[in-house]
Each structure stands twice: as C-alpha cells, then as structure tokens.
Image (cartoon, rainbow, N blue to C red; front, side):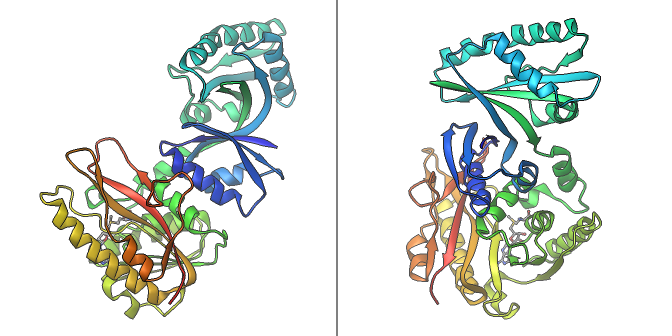
Length: 402
Ligand SMILES: C[S@@+](CC[C@H](N)C(=O)[O-])C[C@H]1O[C@@H](n2cnc3c(N)ncnc32)[C@H](O)[C@@H]1O
C-alpha cells in the first residue's frame, strides 16, 4: 500500500513525527520525499483517519492510486480514474479539485505540468455534464488546495480531491482521504478560557508533534509531565490525543491557575484524564514528585526574554537553568524514560545560530540524545518561524543511567 502525506511548514519535524507514529503500527519504507510531501509504502493497510487525528504536522493524507510517466496527463486516463472514484459516490452533484505537489522535479517540468490543469478540469466538467452529471470544480489561486478549502467544500464527502505529486521521473496520483481538522485546532487554541500570547505559548501542532516524538510506544496510560506547563497547552494536547495521566507544574501562580482552568474547560468536551497541576520551581520539582515515577517529559521551558541585549549572558543563565532541570529530571524520570524538550537558539547579527553549550555535560549526566535522521549535527531539528529572533531547537533525550 502506498500513501502520501502533505507535510506542514516544518517538514523535517512532520516527517520525524510520521515515522514515530507509524513505527509501532507497521513496517514501512519512505519511497519519496520533498519539502512539501512524502510517499510511504506500508506492509499493512493503515487507518488514515486515526493517523491524521494523532498527527500535528501533517496537513493531508491519502492513498496513491496510480503512477504515470512524463509531464502530460492524458484525458482518458484522468477520466478512467474519476469514473472509478465516482462509482463510489451517490450524491447528485460532484465536487472535485486538484492539487499539485512538487516531488523534486525541475521548475520547468513542474510548470509544464501545472499549465494543463485548468484545461483538464474544464474538460472533465463538460464530460460529466454530457453524461447528465452536475459537478463543481473547486479551485484556488494557489496550486495546492488548503485543508480549509478541501473541508469547507466537502470534497472528501461529496466528491474528491486528486493530488498530483510531480517527481523527476514519475507523477504519482493520489486521492486525499483525510485533512487536518483546522476548526478543532482553532477552538482548542482560541476558545480556551486562558491564553496570553505574550507569555509565550507553544503552537498546538508543535505540542502534538513533540508528544508523538517523545512516546515511542504510543501507550496512552503513561505518566506525562510538563514542568514548565504555562497555560497547559502540551497537557491539553496530550489529553486530546488520549493520554490519561498528566502532571503539570510552573513557578508562576497565574500560569498554574490558567492551566487548571484550561484543562477543566477541555475536559468538558468529554476527554477522560487525570491532571495534577501545581506550583513549583523546576529546580525543586523532585521534592514534589515521587522518584522514578514519570514515563515522559514533554516541555517548552523558559526560552529567555523577548528582547535580549547581551545574549551571551542570557545563554549562560538559561544553560544553568537547563542543567539544574535535567539534574532534577534524573530523580523523577524512569530509567529509559524519554524527554522531548525545546532549547532556545539565538539568531546572531551574522545570521548564525547560538546554541546552549550544555550537550557534553548532559551526556556525562547520563542523558543520551536520540538524533533525528534529518536533523542538524547536534542531533536536533530547528523549528523556526520567519522573523523570530529565538529559534526553537527540538531534542529527544533518553535517560540511560543513574
Ligand atoms: C515558554 S513558557 C511555557 C508555555 C507553555 N508551553 C504554554 O503553551 O502555555 C515557559 C514557562 O516556564 C515558566 N518558568 C520559568 N522559569 C521557571 C522555573 N524556574 N521553574 C518552573 N517554571 C518556570 C514560566 O512561568 C512559563 O510559564
């Protein structure tokens, strides 16, 4: 079985997340990958709707239905594919759309392919009309239909979206089966009772990706701790994914109250979970949590002030906070327990990134980095959004000795 996954704006993280979610489910091979999409062959059939619900970094997913050569779509081949899809539809009007993804082909070949799409869509519409079938072609100014357009136009229910993944030798044709539920994310993000963007909230999708990366087993009864929980975004997303044992702490009372309020609100949607949230400085957290009782730590700690005059001094201060935190984590995390954590990386005036220089010390303490296959030399992946001065460096650590 071959599937495609349209990757989010941090494609390396999206891919790492897909691999981590697929690993416990089935054997698989990544057949093709670009910065916007990947094709994966699996041994067993996978439940894409369940997968899409769990993934934070995938925008759409579907099955590959055929492959063609050259940069031309022959209309009979398109019609044949559409006939097969439509034989499973029983609504009076067919909604259809096309998206084009670049799978590492030359820009000129890609443009040649893209130029035929409008013509083919109109031809298809006319052909369907000549058979007495009413249809609507859903298009956009962009070559990729967003998940919002796909969902709002009910392409997955009352029609179909065909995606063309254009490689240098082949074009893969896919049918979208699932899209990210952008509305559910909007509600969980903007409707929660307590939020304050200036206090540094982690994006919901990143929280989900980190939870997936931390948890190798996908065992939802494991105990998850966020010791810098802020308003509780990571804990909320953990609950949404089905984790039932959550612990959160923060040194700031206002944050703790906010996190409690947010999780109480989220529980109202029907998720069943226990959340123990309390005030604690991370440097003393082992006094509040039973030794070796935590399975996973997933957290975005304090990343420094928004504006920094002396970043070298800041790096020193934050490095100390991280080193003390990891010492505390040793006392509460189970052996082999895992941590997915964000380090700050500061963008210098020369556009170079300045990292926390603590990796050797952490290794000596018995923390092993689980390097990302597509990561940077330090074993991490950098998450960056346009003009941000502080970049997020994502790491996974395993607790290897005490
Ligand atoms: C980047 S925010 C975490 C945001 C959180 N993930 C969210 O989405 O709401 C970092 C948090 O670390 C907390 N913090 C800073 N220093 C701390 C310390 N020494 N011990 C515990 N928490 C601390 C801050 O109060 C802040 O809430």
